[in-house]
Length: 297
Image (cartoon, rainbow, N blue to C red; front, top):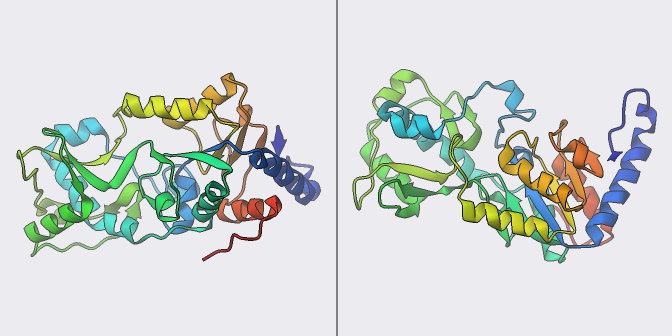
């Protein structure tokens, strides 16, 4: 395994190792058929915090679980109050150089598919086409009774209308568009239900404790199985949801490369690892590939 960061005692050789690692990664990517597996670390440079990376270590946010959401009206009120304000932070976020680099690799025909664990839609906004949203998207809302899906913009308008006199002060933004609010501010928030059947509304994302739909998992396994390279970007791979595809690639003898800030659960399976920011590293990768058509914009 090539470690672009090196070990203690070898730090003076780090620039040389980084260059060698980047060249090795470029060789792998240049062969094409790359499948990207992206995580929250790819979006932190867009101002969206994560649970386990550098921004996650500065907070102690606990994600909402499916069981808590469905089992408690108070929990749903807390979720929707916080999400009603926090979602706007996600909606205003713009793709960063990392997203644009992945889209450019796809445009060049080197990336054949993208599996994203993110729910922010930024990869598609950057121009990504063949994107599988493993954990869904915050842009959609679904009814747990009738299954109807609607846009988040429509729900935002309904919640605003139901809470015209409500106001709250956001003290922080947690991952997945979850704003931190005081309990007394949450208590007066009004939740709305499905306009068709009156059922409970839930963001069209996979909560902790909830299973990813089997058909989606099977699609990701099939895509990974056809890959020439599995390129992991910005994921600690702590959760099995993404890590299973790294294990699948390793079992099939498909090379794995990882770019992430910090160690990952999949490092032992990787031929190349980079402990580095995503935007600058992916931009450098494009330059190493020798096509100057990409530019930050």
